[in-house]
Length: 320
Image 1 (spheres, rainbow, N blue to C red):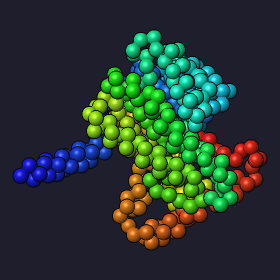
Image 2 (cartoon, one colour; image 1 turned 180 degrees about the horizontal axis):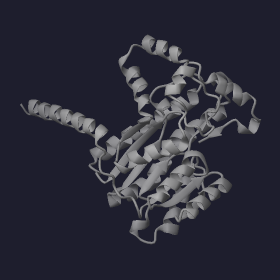
Image 3 (cartoon, rainbow, N blue to C red; image 1 turned 45 degrees about the vertical axis):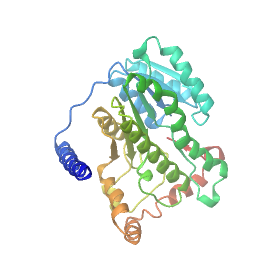
Image 4 (cartoon, rainbow, N blue to C red; image 1 turned 120 degrees about the horizontal axis):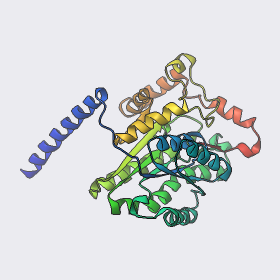
C-alpha cells in the first residue's frame, strides 16, 4: 500500500517538473543575486576562463584566478581590475592534489577575513586535449588529459565543498563538453575525460540532494566546439555547419551565466545539441552512425589532427 502511494506521488512529481520546466522554456525564471560572492575559476589565464572572470566581475563578484601559467593569469586579473573588480591570482597546477590543497589553504588565509569571504562559487574550467589519434598519442599526453579534465575536479571540490556545506551556500560549476554526452572519433582522451567529468558532476549533485544540502547548487555546462582555438581545424559538413557553427566564446559564457543565475542543473550550448544527446539514447547504434556520416561528424577531427602535426612539438597539448 505504501509502495503504491509513493509510486503515485512520484508520478505526480514527474508530471509537475515536466510541466514546470516546459513553462520555463517560454518564461524566464527569476535570477538570483550573486554580487558580493567570491568565485574561484580554474584555467583562468585565457579562453573561456578569462571571459568567465570578466562576466562574474560584471555581476559584482570578487574573483580568484587559478592557472598554471602566471603571465596570462595576471593579464586576466588586469582586465578584471579595469572593469572595477577585485582579482587575486595564484599559480596552481590543478593536476597536483598537494598543490591544490596548499593553494586552497593559502586562499583561505589571504581572503578569509570573515566567513562571508570564503569561496562561494567554484568554476572548474581548466581543460586540455592531446589532438592525436589514440595509437599515435603518447601515454603521458593521455594521462595529462585525464588529470586536467577529470582528476582535478576531485581535488578542487574536496578543497572547497566542506566550507560550502558548512555555510549551506555555494555553487559548483563543471565546464564539460557535449563530447561528454556523445562522442566522436579520434579524440578518445578528450571524450573519456569529459564523460568522466559529467559522471563526476552528476554523482556529486545527487550526493548533495541525498544529504539535503539545499543551499549548494550545481550546474553542468556542456558547450559545442567553442572558437578558442582548442579544436582549430575541426570541420563538419558545410551545409550542417551553417546551422551549427563553432560558438563565439562570449556567447558561450553568456549562455552559461544565464544558466548559473537561475540555478539550471544542465545546459547544452547551443540547445540544438540536445538532439544528438537524445538520439544517442533512443536510436539504434547503426542509426546514429548513419546520422554522423551524413553530417560528416565521424571524420570531423581529421583536419584538426592534421593541423596539429604541422605545429611545433611544444604545442602538442591544447588548453581551454
